[in-house]
Amino acid sequence: MFRQVTETVFASPQITVEAVAEAKDLGIVRIINNRPEGESDDQTPGAEIEAAARAAGIDYVAIPVGHGGFSQAQVDAMSSALDGLDGPVLAYCRSGTRSTLLWALARAKAGDNPAVIASKAAAAGYDVSPVRQLIEMLSAGG
Image (cartoon, rainbow, N blue to C red; front, side, top):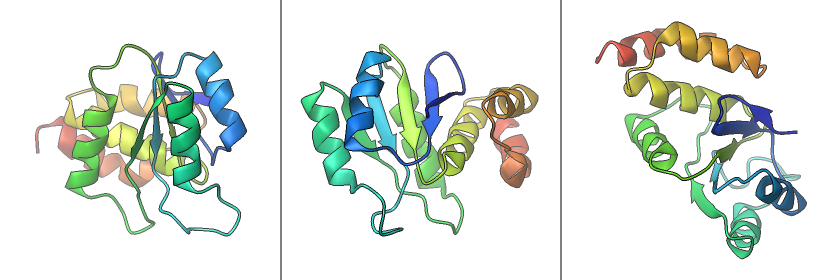
């Protein structure tokens, strides 16, 4: 269920409370929820994931991303959520795509090579082409 994007970043479709134990077994130290509350009737509420994560000793951050695109504030929040951790992070949304795209934008902002970002995402089964132009711009310092 979890797709490994980098050594320290995993992306996933919607997780359940039970999946938090699997994350713990992988050594995940932070779960990032990129899914807005109430997006679909079958999603596990963020508060339930947060409670399970905290009970398992895993940090939890919510950076909801709707289908309208990504804001600078979301990219900055994702950058902060990914930085300075002593272990891997798991980001999830409905399919894992928005989480991966937001990771890509955060890494581009940090100056990572756009081709490397795209390659890592593709190896995990995600396509960054919808934000490739923004990745190029951010990585160039724009």
